[in-house]
Image 1 (cartoon, one colour):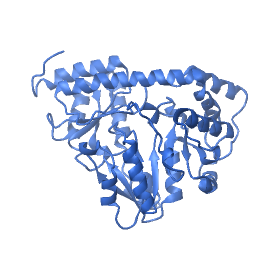
Image 2 (cartoon, rainbow, N blue to C red; image 1 turned 45 degrees about the vertical axis):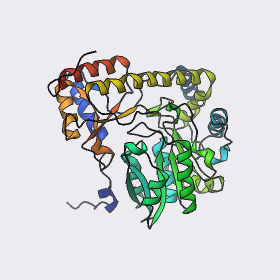
Image 3 (cartoon, rainbow, N blue to C red; image 1 turned 30 degrees about the vertical axis):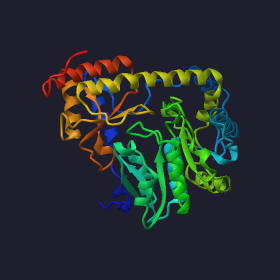
Length: 395
């Protein structure tokens, strides 16, 4: 039997190891093991009651028909109002395209902006799918090694040093996965200006923007109408499986992006769009902000606990729900170490190999998107297991 050959680009896209590791942890849990999941980046909170009520009302009213490819005007207007209220930014609804999650937004952005052979700069470590969005359109992701000196983030000087021939743009994330760190707004402005000088594009992934603990929260949209921003209802709005996000683009380019969306996805989920309108009610916003503070409290617990256990946390995260942990005091192979922890004490973590080639064996990612009780139990298990490496005092 003869099977069709796959396109060459498929060989450039690696599996998403996080999902594979989660599968292994779930299999252990199904077999009766008390697994604590500190691996997947998914809030333990789910959509709040106002959103669930809106979903039920929309379903009962039969509001499940196709919407415009760029999303309903009502939702785009609500998102526009959110930018005005939260950030004092005027973002016209015509600039907003509702998408199937931030992944759909970034896929659409790369489809519109990346030609074969174009080079796009990204941080290493960084969210693995971002480089694959670029590769899916035959672009070349250019990993820029980043470390504690820049809080694991891009800087203007790094961008200028790595731009090179064929460079077309940059894809940034703030707050970032896997490090939970933000780019200082002044630094972000310098990066955008450097890209502008080179006539490139800047895409900024702000999916964790609502979970920014830095105290001085901005949107990259304040830096100019030419900046392209992706966001999502998954993380701050606690709606991961609803697959709903948005993309903000220059207004004169919006029809081109919409044309692509018409052909690639028809439209995002109609029911999810109608329900998401309730995200912007005062009741829902109060719930989301309370939950953000819960994540902050978990961060404030787990970071010192990890340091007490003997791990390195070279940069304290100020957003999202991740800690990028230096496990070198215990192992020179984070992948083997994560496998050991899962098998020995049923604690599921993610090795650095998923996030790039910059010292992946040294680092692992911990997600604190779980309950305080689970975090405390994980620390107890780790303390007992790690005692064989180096005696660690108890609390």
